[in-house]
Length: 552
Image (cartoon, rainbow, N blue to C red):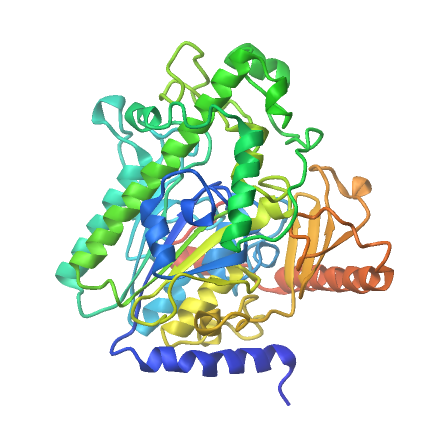
């Protein structure tokens, strides 16, 4: 007899079959992954930032309103590329241990199915690209996260490239798109008979806030009203769009990133215009308002530049005649970041904000606006940290356009969805005794809302814990503090309280106990499976992939 998990997988495969039968050839795949972009930054998710190409994907595709990340860059990318939660592959910053032998990346699943695979952009997981680009046929890899105009660490198929200079007019978001387009053109020229998989992962709009000045100028006065007014206006717009149905929570000035540069250092290097807490806009000085609206203008410029480069990639796919046959996913690796750090080459307060001599973070006030109306930011597993704007378009396979899907889903679902649509099974490449991937195919949800149910969705990052079961979310919100400081569980009903304002734990004590036990069982099982599996180091090195021991 099938258990519920196997039953759901079998049912999902049957539901996806009509999509596959309607295709004359296997579909191509394109993943577009933003970095630290807020849930509601894009126009199609209620934002004021101009994102016409992302919006066009939404109007000709589907928007998932309850897509989830892990709350941080590295763990989310690991989940996306492996189909396992980061705790299962030792790829969360809080998870020690070896990479287990069952960890596989997209090329391992898709190459046996006849695919050519390409990556261009940020990496930031324990697997480094190694000698052959982590199994990708081509990989242009950004390893430096501190510079947009002159990054120090760039690789092409695992080989180090010269560092660009300011005279080269280099900008990472554009360069990453250039290489993605180059790979596609080569594919069209030399491998047109094969389907392709492309993973485009720009660093934008992750800190530091750096963008071409002409892009920044476009948003010069856009955000002068401040985050309070714009956050409320966005929330009202999102309610009308059907994206959320909750109240607008207040700002939370007492919740701030504990690893930020000290306030004294930020004020000394950046100046008195800096703001390090999410306080009401009306309490800011004129100097603070000037710098803060400039920072948001840079953030918006970075998002719009990314959207422009996405448009170029889409134009190339269209020129190849592959537009209808390409399944496109757009999402972000976590919510907008409240982090305020000074790294890289430091910050020159006399240089134009957003130039290569500056190092700014958007800060908690605008991060709260970018994630509106959801609570908190990157690294927390409250909705503002984990909610990801997910758009899926497949002109040749999804008949319903410009619709919402409210199925809760997670980054771990992307790989099994793609393998499913490619006609494969994730179990085909697994070593003996490997646990099944954590995710499930979302293909049934392409046809109808509610088509891809989950038993649970699990979160554990930086001493923040949560479990989503149906419409209920159990969460313990910390501030990056160890276990002895863990808070009691809160419980929220996501049907009416996506903004996590009405704690139901006292009224639902039995449910809290049940979900607490379930979270503990899942967390313990994942650690046992990971630690009991053979170390993958030898296998990775034999295949030209060296594990990266840096925290990701």
